[in-house]
Length: 152
Image (cartoon, rainbow, N blue to C red; front, side, top):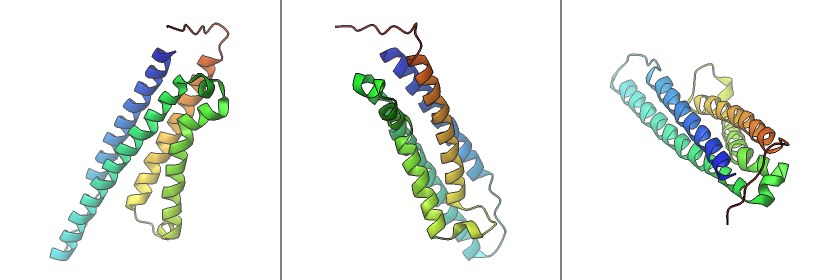
């Protein structure tokens, strides 16, 4: 059982790292307009803020993926809802927080790409992948030929 959970965690963390790399590429490919010194300074601050949010995103994905290890506990693994929370509880809270920030700051009214819009897009992508991973995990656990070997 530990090997199965470790494999799902490893796939989750590798996907998180791949999303982080793509997020950094999106940040680096953002076009900035030319202007005076103040515009240039604001663009530098925008890039630094984007990099800080991408680092926070990486830390949040590592924390979210480490919650998968709670499935080692039989009581959590055998309960569908608790197992669901280990896979999707923290990512859903993160998406709700980011969406709440966007709504309260009225960031959806502008056509320009904001920091939170990129963050929300990649957080939803991580959430969708984690949902798929949870469904595959439940299918593997519920297989009739899946035999759990306990080692003492």
